[in-house]
Amino acid sequence: MDAFSLTALRCRELLASREVSATELVRLYLDQIAALDPQVGAYLLVTQEEALRRAAAVDAKRPAERKPWEGVPIALKDVLCTEGVETTCGSKILKGYVPPYDATAVAKLREAGLIFLGKLNMDEFAMGSSTENSGYQLTRNPWDLERVPGGSSGGSAACVAAAEAPWALGTDTGGSIRQPASLCGVVGLKPTYGAVSRYGLVAFASSLDQIGPLTRDVKDAAALLDLIAGRDPMDSTSLGLPQPIAIPRATDLVGKRFGIIGEFMGDACEAGVREVFNDAVAHIHALGGVCEEVSLPSVAKGIAAYYIIAPAEASSNLARFDGVRYGHRTAGTENLFEMYLRSRSEGFGPEVKRRIMIGTYVLSAGYYEAYYGQAQRTRTLIIEDFQRAFARFDYLISPTSPTVAFTIGERTEDPLAMYLSDLCTIPVNLAGLPAISLPAGLSRGLPVGLQLIGPHFSEQGLLEAAHALEQRLAFRALPPIVEVIR
Ligand code: GLN
Image (cartoon, rainbow, N blue to C red; front, side, top):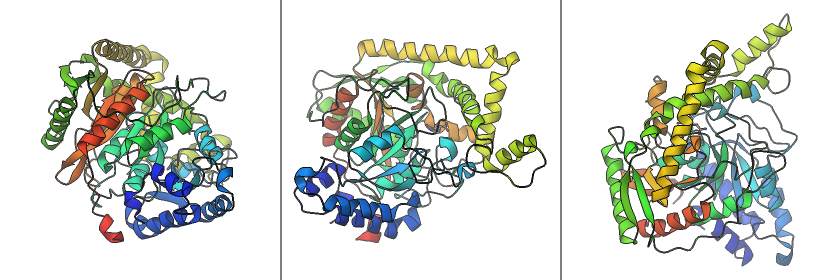
């Protein structure tokens, strides 16, 4: 059996027809991890024994007793709380933290009978676009081990690209599902804000964070979204989705109108990316869809507004890491204040400190209006731009990332260059919209993702359109790392 050819849906079918046992399936992925992860570095923790124990329990049941997804493996970004399993959020400050509870999304998967393979690497507290801000290790892009997998869900994207799990959960605050999905040639979906409960997701920027799937195809993204979506009394900002998500079946785009966001097609967008994007537009036309350029003038200010709003929320959310309640506490201090100071100084990495300082500054009384107030007004303008565009178009499209995967170290010295990676994804979070990144082709041998954005709660339609386009694009290339296995 070849893990690179398996989707989660296929795993489910093979289990149902008894062509494989849950144990064989778990072993297949453990073997992939053993063979590839020393090079890729996607996992922070592999919960091998627990996974095999769960698989044996599934195999002991009669088929009629099993739930539909029971026995299908999955891996989780380490920002999600897992009962009894260390959750570090990629930060030294949470080293050794073992949550006493599951995040709601995790609990739903556990309830559905999925088997957890382990916890995936990420930028510390999900701050970053390359996973290089992890407090623990580098994750490498399976398409080129000298390049980053994107971030902050770089572990999740690299894991799925290297078939070290059939699918994975990530989180997206400004692009952290879609951008790594794009750079690693997999599908990534950020749901509408509120579709999925944030309970048990370690908070970065609470008005922007959403949990979502990283998968090998659009059908799997639909299935995983359906498993995790829903209103949750533990998250008062959660609403769920208007209807359960069905597996998409659309084969054409007849009558659908797509707006190409002009502001994302400027100089920042690499020529090779533009080429793949233009090909995708031709495919949309061939499927009966109509594409036209549209201007959303305020989205160009998305990054500026985001880098005030997100750090402001982060500085407040991260105040709880004080050496008292969670994870790392410094040794041998004289008094409480010094204990706070040293625990935080030792536990947080440079990017997190930068964000806490920016956030604290923009929220300080004298500057509140000048920065935070302005950023919130800009956010409203962006929301209005999207609303106007959706009056004319069913979906908006753009490249997911202006460039293909960059080399390790290339942007670490220059935070602004790193921040630009999320040019096309950040405005979507500011407006709370759903969006999906789909592998559309290769440029210089590296994957290029296409982003489709829909109105609030349009997930089903968005998935249908993405599925139709996916069939037409027929992206079948595999990362070179496949040779290690074959
Ligand atoms: N790269 C962006 C940041 O660093 C977005 C991260 C995310 O979506 N979690 O904040």
